[in-house]
Image 1 (cartoon, rainbow, N blue to C red):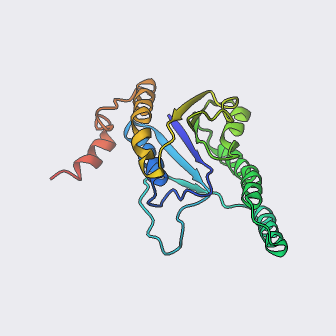
Image 2: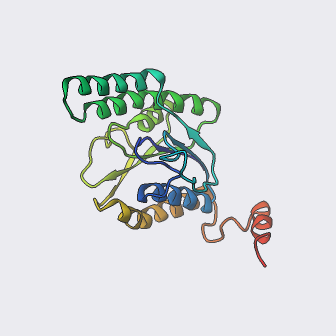
Image 3: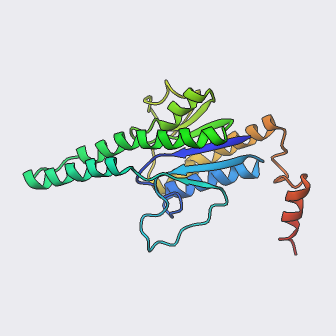
Length: 211
């Protein structure tokens, strides 16, 4: 099964070392071990050019905010400085405008290779994955915070994760998401207990790491 994993959160570097970053990579790796082909789409790889990126053995679609989106956010930041105000408006406008940038990039990606399912990790104002899934006729699975109903109308299924400190979020997410990967493997006809060792190419690859 081809899975497009969408993380539109501008604050989570998918190759970083924070709790949210580890959660994303852990789930992507679980999908891979269950026999699925995964592509990860995200606006942010690392927080800093000095940060050593973590390893992710899947293709990554890196979608930066467009020049127009970035310029709008900078203009609002400059206006706040001029009038001596401080609020969340620049960040919110950035997220709203970026959602359209992200949706455009996902549409282009899906034209060349349409996924079987789009898996969207819910973010504030992030509906690009759900919108594109509806347009191309594939189901979207959304991971949302407990009580979040914003994306429910766009998703085929939602998985609610309890609100906990970010460093603990992988612990809360791993059980339901491992079960999801397990059942998707069964649906696609793969054996989730063998790490695809019953397929000759993967068996050879695994054997190369054995003593």
